[in-house]
Image 1 (cartoon, rainbow, N blue to C red):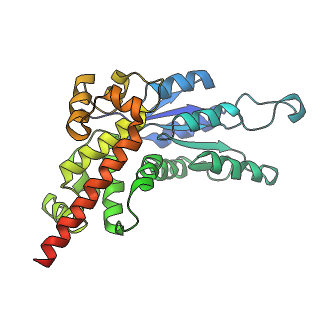
Image 2 (cartoon, rainbow, N blue to C red; image 1 turned 135 degrees about the vertical axis):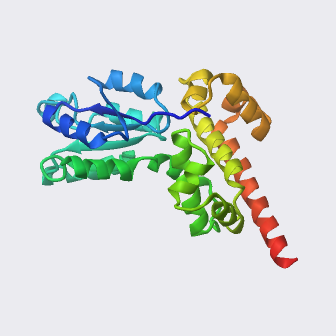
Image 3 (cartoon, rainbow, N blue to C red; image 1 turned 90 degrees about the vertical axis):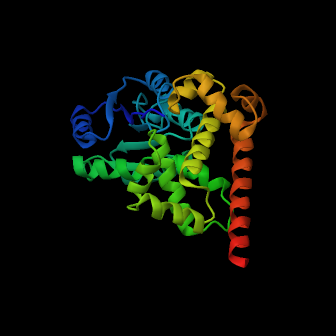
Length: 279
């Protein structure tokens, strides 16, 4: 697998704030300014699941409310609906009259809000970026986990999701959890999870299937954003894990099918664990 860059797509008219964001990126993100919603849409289509977006939620909505301005941009809601695996942060001047908009942004799926003029230093912005990255992908995984999944298992899976999103491997997962590879393997066994390499492969399949459910993404684009050099690499892994090609998965509901298969794997691992305990 090749490493995937972590872009930060910025749509914001405030030049001073944009410079603070650029400073906040350090070496952790690829800072990229876009000039409008249509350009942002094109950029996010070409970006890996590791991408983050930081936007002015009112961009392009200047003017009096009765003239069609002043409200939240509907383009933002469209992007949030079409790309649920991309973490989106909103940055604007938070005022009492905008508290209802804060609640609306939360319902839409915005994961962090930066209040310009209050918590927009480079250090504060960096902390918000760190907190936001990977959250939508983890939320997708959380939706399919059995209720009896332990807290330790959830922590491992959350870290694995972030590792997969940038194309890293089992050693990086162990490092992220501050464990040796041997200890990580033992934790996975005790938590009823597949071995680290197998678990990372499953999460990569889940992320690919979530992207396949977007009919606007070509299969080759999905393969590239998931770290495969060609669509044949993606096809091999989906055939191995789900006995179906990417095109077949897209027709049948890719993420729903893949998540059911992953839950079956978790249940089987849990059964094996109980068998070992009882023997």
